[in-house]
Image (cartoon, rainbow, N blue to C red; front, side, top):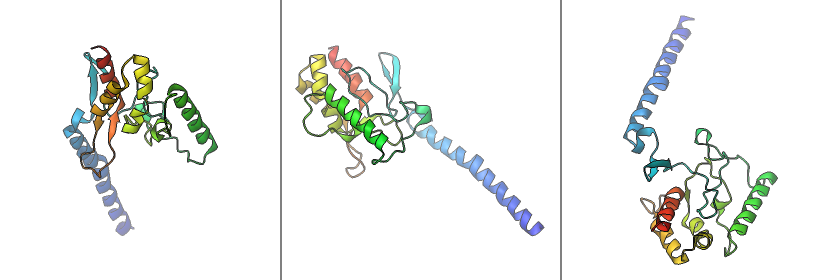
Length: 188
């Protein structure tokens, strides 16, 4: 019995130290080197924190660019997707409703609606859209803010973040940053 219990006890003790002490310490140390020191990168506007750079927010007012829909209602403390597949009738109904609402808000939209404007991300907290998702909303924003479409398009173009290396992901637009720039543009 000693030949089985003693090695099992030692292995348990070693794994307890590795998994409960060493691994969390390494993760904490890496987080301290990251921007925001593991607390997230806060975005401030006029001296007030208005959000976080990598956490999506809901923008209800039609004169703002819409974020990607969230399956968790933008609650960062419980991120997650809907876990409903593309053939799920409830999910299809939700997407159809979102498409109808988008087309109602953006009657000048030509072609198909970018998927990220009507489907939630895996985390439910994606702060980015594709450039196509932002450009699809330019007509509405320009009309509601009485701005030339070319000016709003230029603002979107200025806020496109290209991937570090071309094949490491798509170009993105941070919706919070874009809406803050939009407010600044309107105040000039």
